[in-house]
Image 1: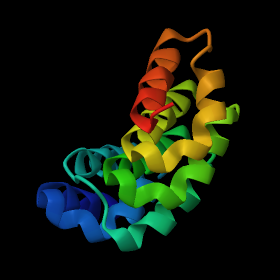
Image 2: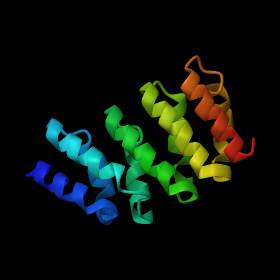
Image 3: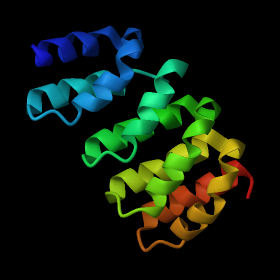
Length: 147
């Protein structure tokens, strides 16, 4: 039943926006088919609605890297509207989270732009990371913020 629901949402495209947080949470489902359909739906979702921002912030530190990745991705898609997510994203960037999640976090902070100014220090550290992709994304975010 969860797979069928995720599959229907995947076919809805941006009309599935009200289910954004549920789809992100479904990325951590035990059933691989549910996870695949949830990701398929999220790929075409676009920015989340404003009423989903708080739920997505709560999923940023999730233990499942795929859940954290997609929560961060949607917050980045929200751009400046996700300014309230900056503390959670900054914490994630500075944590020992999965590298792909930290990379996506740097990207999301850049998409939030000047409203993410409080993340400058964490982005500065990430800009010196040994991982070249994380360093590049952090530098791009610093430029977008206006550092």
